[in-house]
Image (cartoon, rainbow, N blue to C red; front, side):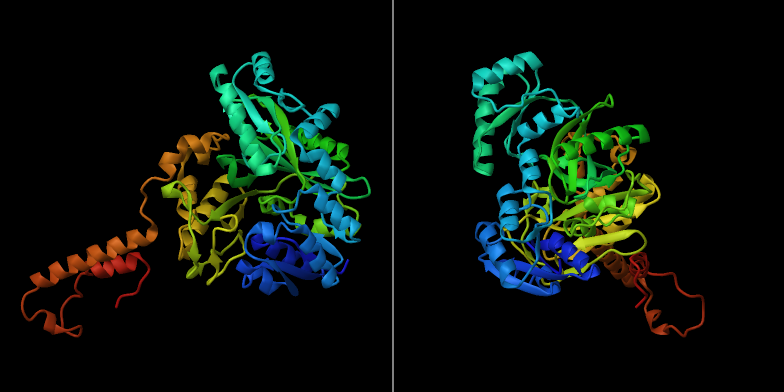
Length: 508
């Protein structure tokens, strides 16, 4: 393997390109017309245009991507996450074209691609699952019968779904028929498959996931857990490793279950098993993500393992050097910086990034696919970058993240920066008292009116100017003409000078 085509865009494409460079591999970017000047296009050794901005005409065109790989003599394709990364047919097409697929076998993607099939596999290999069905519902009558057996509340879930699409919580029988119809309709629109199944709804759980690595020689290990409970509408917003709710014994048990699930599917490469962790300490397998995860950096920072490099190494046939699962060292936290206006219902924000100040200092990592001048459109996911920190303890990681967020400046569009600052300041979050419904309960207090730092500075300067004007109007005639060389004590600093100094500015 000498040349890798990266079938993605944004920060994950840039992340893979960097890994290729460190391993001495050539990289090839693909791009739509909207991304012609994007960072991943500039950083790759070569770049190939796919088509117009819509994903359906560019990044979701597997035929064009394979054709691009062949045209430049690439040996392998890395899909990143999203787009075609978990499409069995694409993994198979890449393999059939004589190229290396940097990911799990198509058969493993198929085994874990359907939630019902994954549940069946998990049950067969002693991996605990939430009580529920393993076959899609036929109709509302069957749903009512199953709900009565499990007891309300129940959860309707799209069998081919993800990201909260085709998912409905049903708390009483009168809601069941309409909720089922709504879930099926949304699943059909999102995934082309209206199959929906039932799970018992677990109240107040955490979302905890286990990272696994498996090579083609039979070795599979767990690399600890990630806490992903800070979610809005089933979309993760903040992740950390380890979890404040997991001790060494529970970590070992969850890691062993994840390894059993991966081996049962014939898994190779990097993958993630997602679990619900109930308040009583019981954990339940949800699904397996057969790709690299957005939040993989927090695992990298607490284990010292470069997951993306190992994806490439495993695809090239290397053996894992680790003989046992790896426990975390210190604490890592990630905030997804998105182009959304949190104070206005998280509406998407578009425009050109006119100024960007990237945080720095010890233990701070910035994974981004944008820079000054980048155009942010509505064609793709709103995530601009990931801000990740590491520190010896969780409290120190929160303090470091707050400092890094405070340093971050993005001008030209609205971002989620202020929202993340508020979360870091939240007393419940600081205690680790979170679950998957926590953000929905706390959202109003986290997106309320909190003046951005720039507005606070402007208000302080404006107040100082007015105070200085009033002071000067009270100065006795002739006093101002004495000048700085006049005898006498140094006059008291003006409100303007005090405000300037408080903002780190020097006296004029």
